[in-house]
Image (cartoon, rainbow, N blue to C red):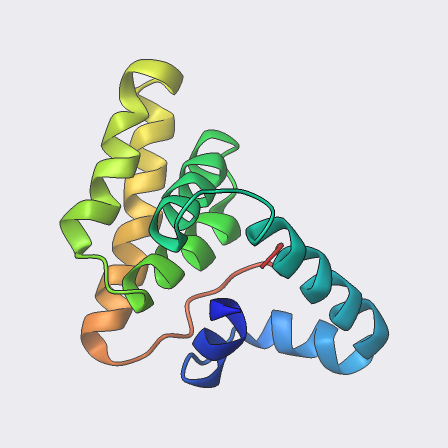
Length: 126
């Protein structure tokens, strides 16, 4: 699955790596569930990445936005494509939520430009 390949060249946040190290059986099960979900339907990897980012934006999950924005960039999306996900949220969840999400996305874009891909993120589904 693309997720496994992606992790080969992406520095995962310390929190995620710590949970994986402490609970390897849970981490393997979680990864297997994520892989199964990603392959369960017709959406492309690009579409899945955008949907997952949008879910994190809508739920106001800072770590989820960081994680999914980072994954979008690593999968080859341009920063403006990732930013648009937050902008699209404006008329659905309001300006404050959109602005927060855009700030979190900018955290990741700035980190990517600096060459550091270790923006804080909570462990979340693959």
